[in-house]
Image (tube, rainbow over all chains, first blue to last red; front, side, top):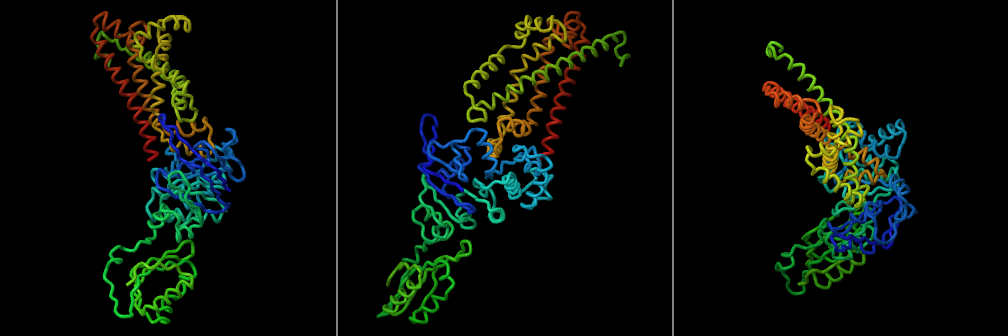
Length: 343
Length: 225
């Protein structure tokens, strides 16, 4: 759906050149929800704005639905933009128009006949659940309702691609979830490709199929969300993942005294698991098989899409040889084991 | 009313005619100055850097012309434009003739007022329209002007009020209206009553225009709240 190749953007600000995007290449598949995460100033906003040419790239190519967008003429670009919806952090609704007319706005731009446009607006308001708010002005709406209007407006001309520029960043967590759910629903119902940028890993976790991590104007990691969450490859990805699911073991655990005597040993381990293995009673069967004591020190389980994943920090006490065998058993079952401390 | 003035009842007729002349001059020149000043203001905004019709050269040239025109005091404008007014109207005396300098002096003022109003529109709104595929004309007619309407109306009122003042100045050089009345009767013939009445009528006029402007702008703002 989107194919970005070697995209660079350089801003010339007061004689100084600022590199906002550095040789970015990225492919977004049809029908997926693709997230780009990065800290503010990383370049994600510039990147999404290049896709509908709100920013003019300095170098590189962007094809949307097989059509090169960077070389379009003015009129062609306007027509192409009508088929790329966009929603914004600040909603950007017209205060001079009520909800109905705000959704009507892009249809006026596309010169859709009025009666047809009115019908379309009705459908869209129904889709986002705002039929009863049609006559209200944006100032009378809550943030979540405003973003719903924004979404209805973005979908007015039947785009194949929706760009979301921090669309939930101004909303509270609960409203964020409901807007994300709406995005997910329209993604499925309309087979709409969604490209979103965010600084919130929760957004990525909740709706995205794939994610790209952008840091310092470069894409440092791209992959399935589950993959990036379970095994982040770069320090930036790591810190984003940690913001949602803590992999860190509280420091005092690593230094508190552990008792051991004779051939009894104690190990502090961290078990990471994804998917199916999370469902199996592996820990309890290990306890029975190897006759060891286990106490859960710290744990974290979450779901990405429908796959459970998480980690557990365990203190295991038992015969030192049996302990080693128990670890091998867990590894053999596909769990990732990290020994944090031995005693 | 008539008894109040006693044998000065002739004043009432004079004041009524002069008031009508002033309203006529001010209204016509305000409307005409917007006819030219509004597009000029729109061009000043939209040709600025990073705006929808960016054109730094044109923007600088127009900006300089507007600034130059605004730095000429109106009383000098009035004299400077006499030949032009004669060419256009056939005379430089009278109500119709004073509409010419009033309008021309107000155009750069209007342009700046419009520019200020339109500059207040958030960048994000313009970008949203562009992201939907709007062209410059659609951004102007569907975003900039409607969004800035309350502020534009207040600007319109301020322009009209300024023109009430200017029209009095034009009156002194034979432009008609309350200015002429005050000058001929109040100043040259020491008719203090005429002077007083003129001042009162001017105050009422200005108050009226301001209230009308505030009211209309307020109504729109309230509707949007």
